[in-house]
Image (cartoon, rainbow, N blue to C red; front, side):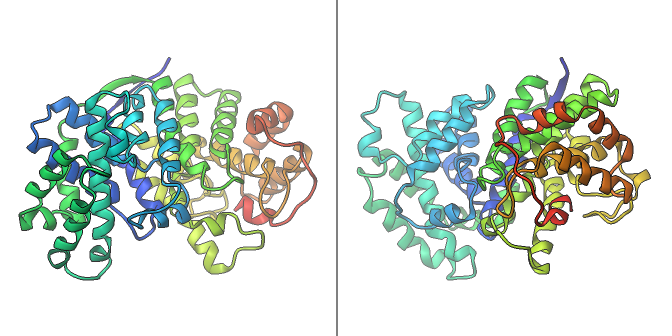
Length: 424
């Protein structure tokens, strides 16, 4: 089984940048929460391991949020159904051995202290969850200042008053006291600026060394994030899994060694992570995208690269993921590479992406049957866009490719609207 040298802090930090994209303009939320929570934890003398768990949980606390519409609700100090994204996030983290210990913290990061204090959970978990809740609400209340509103020093008394008002009901009094102590200085509020936050988190990143991790565990970790992407729309559910499985199959049919097939599977899981920036309405639009909308859509593969390339050990995977919309004739995006400049793995990923997208239901059409998909792949290959040899391997194993790409997909329905946009 393949092994990868990965820095877990670096991986979580980079992938948390993807969560920032969901907010479009509301960025650095998780990082600000992590900074404030860590400062409170330090004041209370929490040990290194407890602080590390707190930091990770704070960065990932909104991993249950995929939709821009849901993210918009997070900006409200109080809102209905806030527990839903906590449940989703906790479930996702539970699926990874490297992150499962954070799931209860994330599950309860919107649970009021009046209820949480009596739950049968370790005190450390309850305090960490409630501290994230407290600092999360501070960040939300501060958001207008980061969007060009009033200076944060002028707003801090009002923000602090909101927290104090919920002492004992929403928030543990001990945590409120810690927050009031650390927030008394101007420096605390100045640090919430985006540039300063990145610098603060760089120190945390430096405290973790690379570790050898088996492919199976790394796949579990990246699937947390691929599932966040696919949850943006019911029409993209299981897309990343389908692309990953098909890319791996085609890699094996192409004679690639196991480690390359493992990397292809990871690239398939992560290739669309940049789509978290795309507004929900574009992904679910039943009609043709306008030119302006298509321009917005086209940046997702570049965003995928920017999220993934800082993770040492995943550099090639980041490159392949960013190139899954490149075409052999140079008409693809975002780099307009020609065939000789596109790695074999990226060409495999491109075919797998087109195949799976056509095999899956979309708002503008039903899933296409294998023969119709093959016809479109052949047309694209003959037209110089997709790799002919890779398409021929798909043709020779068409029904195995179909099963691999669709898993539990619906029975195919014929026809063909906006096929060109799916292929592009």
